[in-house]
Amino acid sequence: MEKTQSTGLLFEISHKGRRCHRLSPIDVPAKPVSSTLDKSYLASSTPPWPEVGEVDLVRHYVNLSTKNMSIDSNFYPLGSCTMKYNPKRHERLASLGGLANLHPLQEEKTCQGMLEILWEMQEFLGEIAGLDGVSLQPAAGAQGELTSLLVAAAYFRSRGEKRTKVLIPDSAHGTNPASAAIAGFDTVSIKSNSRGRVDLDDLASKVDGQTAVFMITNPNTLGLFDEQIVKITQLIHQAGGLVYLDGANMNAILGMTRPGDFGVDMMHYNVHKTFTGPHGGGGPGAGPIAVRAPLIPFLPSPIVKKEKDTFTLDYDRPQSIGRVHSFLGNMGILLRGYLYIRTLGPDGLKQVTENAVLNANYLLSLIYGAFDVPHGNRCMHEFVASARNLRRDKKISAMDIAKRLLDYGYHAPTVYFPLVVPEALMMEPTETESKETLENFAATLLKIKEESPELLQQAPHSLGISRPDEVRAAREPILRWKSN
Ligand SMILES: *Cc1c(COP(=O)(O)O)cnc(C)c1O
Image (cartoon, rainbow, N blue to C red; front, side, top):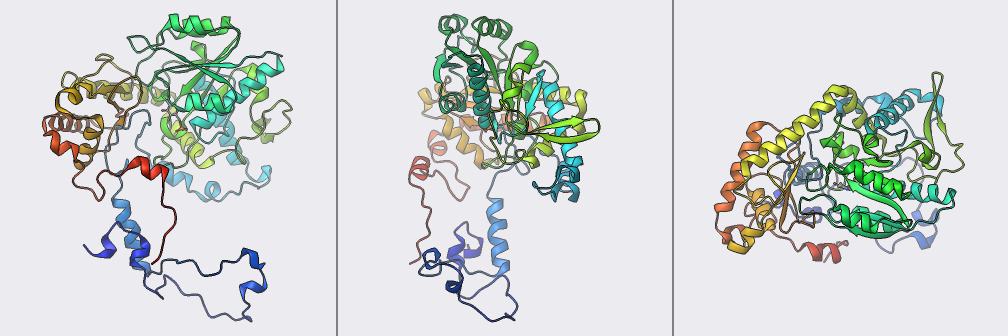
């Protein structure tokens, strides 16, 4: 293959003197940079920038982009991440000049439209949650968790209560204990029972006057709705604690039930998951939080306020924990989420949930029996299969199956999460996939299961990179190009 077609580095196709554009001749006296900048800021030599022509540059990036799996090119059943299709209509609306060209430092009276959208978004998210106040600031689910726990800490401080513990089920996402630790709490792990739900006896034995918050994901990361939730929230409230909902799985309950109605006091949304913000590759997110009335004074400032027909930013909130993001958060993602909610309306959102749950159950029914699914043949919007028997009998791991799926043009499911399932393969088809896509995917999984272990252990065979050393890539990343 020619160099320009490779997935190599731009540096490798560099030729001295090539340019994408040329500046017009200078028509003022030239000055050396050293006459305007202090010497301490100047490098001793020019950095080794790649020098390429425009056509080679464009081909480099276009070719690289086709090496990627994306929701626009491949089925992407990445459990927990809700990789649903991002409607292109919303991209077009979000790029309208009146929205896309706003400057965050504009005066409020010059951006009333955007403030109205954000105010309505606060109202919608409060209504969907069944909670009273909303902050749009957090940039992702994990930051929503941290922000909520800081709000909870401020709330207990204001009441003169010293509560040090955050209780978290063992099936939780790793961000839950991480957020609790960063917010200064001690974490206590709560066992799951054999049905994959919270073990009530274990919970009851660990709740006490030191309990600040119980964090729960419902439906949980096994794709199971914990129907004990009212009992659980009562148990926590009797001990004076607060209940936090990790809302990453809201796609399974939109319009069917509201966290506030089943006893939750605060929660985050992942707008990039539930409400179709494009995500993946660490792209932008939005993790707004919703809370019950007594917690509102502690929310980050500002909050969008409506007075008569005018929208303003309310900074006059003396008990607020302060900012967690510049300006109002990741508006581009919030805006796409708003457009999604407005496009579908209340009935449409309910249909999203119905179809997401139907699709997941259909996929589950197609592979159930062929694959080990430890928590039964019914699920919410996702389910977790296990390759533990395959590993034992044929030395085929969850990773081998995930890697082999790439050869067939599918993004892999989430693997090795949640931690409570060995050799986990966590599948979430979302509501936007057709029956045929699910059938083809299931047929591929069944086919892979019958392939030889040797073939699977070396997969993928069709991509530029097969099995990179992920640990070394994370621990010893090469961040500097060495020219020789
Ligand atoms: C995605 C996810 C998170 C973290 O959300 P981010 O937006 O990625 O920070 C937390 N909990 C669960 C269950 C998730 O799936």
